[in-house]
Image: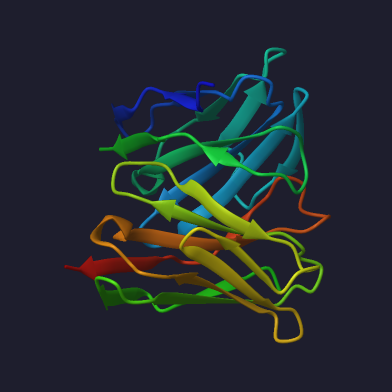
Length: 113
Length: 113
């Protein structure tokens, strides 16, 4: 069974630009969650999508948004990039929403210059 | 109430020794407690998870001990090996969290040969 696939693996963007990251969950999984990982703040929850609906949202500004498609693939978008948005963005796949095992992808390393 | 506190921040153990990492939580509604292992450049990998209806769960060399009254849980790695050197994260979630995992700050484990 293929794991969670995140693309691209690395991105360098300029402050003020926008970026879109992609996540393909494990086949059959319908829940996708996004996390931001930084050395200072650790792993922080961004949002969760299940059946194309956002189920939960973390404490991030509106510049961070996401969506999920009918095939469960998800994208997250960050607009008006700031230097502080530099982080590893991780996607987690679960069979369903709620208290189930979550499997992470390798992440997308975003650097904002 | 949403925090998960993890200690120690870093840990050095000799090969063959026992590695112990501790976590404490405040929200009594939390009822799912996974541990993740992360190697540099990789996403977190689910190691083992426990729910509060049991006090201990063992999978190979990894054991979770859970103390509901103290609101604490810990990871024990028996016969620690150099290949176990990684960063370990505890996490917690509850019925009102949806797919949201709240992570501890991580413990960097180094196993010396």
